[in-house]
Amino acid sequence: MKILLLGPPGGGKGTQSKFLMSKFNIPQISTGDMLRSHVKNDTILGQKAKKYMEKGELVTDSLILEMMEVRFKEKDCINGFILDGFPRTIKQAEGLDNLFKKSNQKLNHVIVIDVEDDEIVSRMSGRRVHPESGRVYHIKYNPPIDEGKDDITNEPLIIRDDDKEETVRNRLLVYHNQTKPLIDYYNKNVITINGSQSIEKVKSNIIESIN
Ligand code: AMP
Image 1 (cartoon, protein in one colour):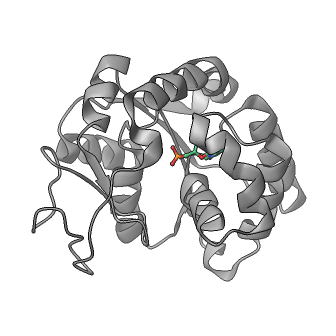
Image 2 (image 1 turned 180 degrees about the horizontal axis):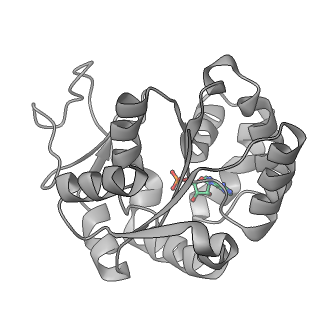
């Protein structure tokens, strides 16, 4: 099963991906997490990506597509995956189509998690992440068991640099200009879920739409 989650940054794609991962036993492929890991390990790709990420801008399409071509060849992708944060531009969607064509694959579900900009900004201020695993929490909506600590490892949670308000506003602008056109690109295959509902409700809406 191949699922694409679309929607604004901070709209809950990461949180919902984690549920889908365990329900369908397929990996979450988050380009954001992959890039952050490259930056952390100071790889050549990470060095190239860093300057865009800090400003909330998009990393170049060619860099992303090269990274994804390698990722799709990994063993864990055999039964499908959840795409979270990719594709983010029409160019990337076309690149993905080409990669899929080569191997006779296609997306089974395109799901948009829809949330208003102002709600995103207020949500982001409470967002905390566990940098090693990419697990995402929210101090109000999805708090960890122990305040400020990851549920699994008990390691400290952090606020990501790109979750600061100014960067968030820029990321939303980038979303509207460059990523939202993908909703038309995938057109009749798209299912839109109201992402302002509770995490549980969004989750059950997604599962229903898949079934
Ligand atoms: P995310 O965690 O998905 O919000 O991604 C964090 C940052 O990584 C974005 O603001 C971009 O700078 C970069 N990024 C992640 N995925 C992509 C992508 N598919 N194309 C371009 N840039 C990306």
